[in-house]
Length: 232
Image (tube, rainbow, N blue to C red; front, side, top):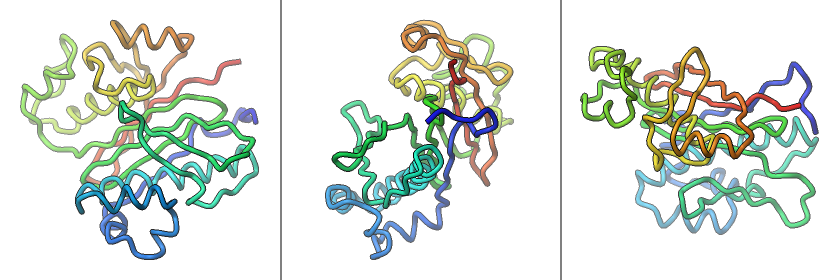
């Protein structure tokens, strides 16, 4: 289904830390949202990793349900939306056999404050990153900062540091790369991501769409969502 002009470019969902903490015990109402395969994976994780995984996946299931309701008129049960990760760590969605709908592009992130997920509307690609707003050492910032960027993100301005990091990681996730690529090859300026090196090659392979990046403060964390503009 093609998005209408005033439709949101993506569906976003958050799972606060308190919800993730409760979910980590896998009470029955949480278990009911996952397939047997998903539950087996969750039960095998250590408690902290299980909490983090649940924060992202609960957010993703909510965003995916909202997507299918809005774009396809289908309200899936959460356990029908089976989530896993591929060998590169990217999230994968498996729909019930015979479902006639395409799998949308979606992205998941988690931080100490909880989880976030975004699903692209109208065939768009998305990338999401959620990071705690805390001061980071200069060597950590240098890992992602292109020439000239580090000076604008000193330890005295942790929100600027988080903005630098999240914008780049969200854009790389949109490209399907994540931080396996060099984040210094991404610049986010005036709400638009620009690429060089391997990220540029991946971007051109997608048809070189405009990639918009939006930021939102979520409690003690900063959220970045990268989204392609709809193509005609």
